[in-house]
Image 1 (cartoon, rainbow, N blue to C red):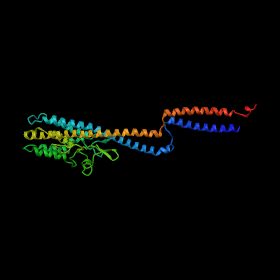
Image 2 (image 1 turned 180 degrees about the vertical axis):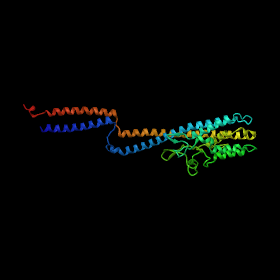
Image 3 (image 1 turned 135 degrees about the vertical axis):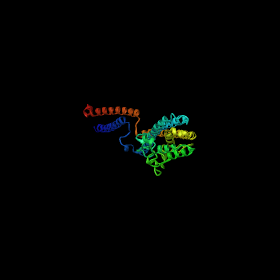
Image 4 (image 1 turned 45 degrees about the vertical axis):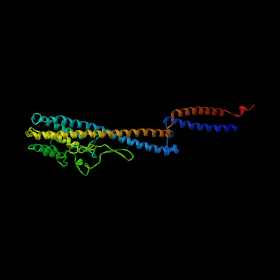
Length: 356
């Protein structure tokens, strides 16, 4: 009987081990993970923690880049419309200005005033509640009063200069309109106090997005100054100011200025050239932003590819092969059933069954 008892004890121990293995395999099939706690994978824990940190870092970069691309896409839409306005009035309206035919000047002025308001509203465009052209001042509009642009300080200054056109002073009038558009003084500039402050908005760098360790890619634009584009020709140095200057000049024209045909033609040429400069610089800005978008998209794709590779490595440490685990579970279940059966048979053994 001591032999039977010894066999029974060993069989019970083996059965307990099989039950424990069965529980582990069942849990692994249910959760897909090797262990419930990180400490249960102690030998591989440092590697797992390192992989998780790297995955988190790259996912953070990818998320930030995605948000930046949402903003750049919204910005591109705005630039497209601003460019269309510059072309409409530069290549169309301003090209038709003629001191011999002033019958359309009233309509031109009306259209230009409406366009001024639209430009101000476009420069106040937002993405996810943040102003796109406001620099780091995300919560306040870069153009505080777009509806007031046709009667604001900039428009009034330009109108006053144009009202004095005549006697061969077209160049001086053009210079005065340029100066008015470049004036950052309160009551004249249509732009926010932040953007007009030399110590803050006028001096700060473009908004950028962290694309990797030690890598910041600039993509932000400003309402009152160029970002990547360099304005050429008849310009204030800013495509937005050039556009506002041209529209305000058109809005200020009346038949009275046609009394001096030569000056009228010269000023009309200045307006056309200024709007052409605005159109070209807006196109350059959009092109540069497009290159930035391509770069950011490529970087985000690299982060995504590397993240997938890192997740696969982490899965090798933390997760199980479901098919293989199911196979082991079935084999363990079969062995456990056999062990239970053997225990049952061994438990029925008595000495009397073997006595004659």
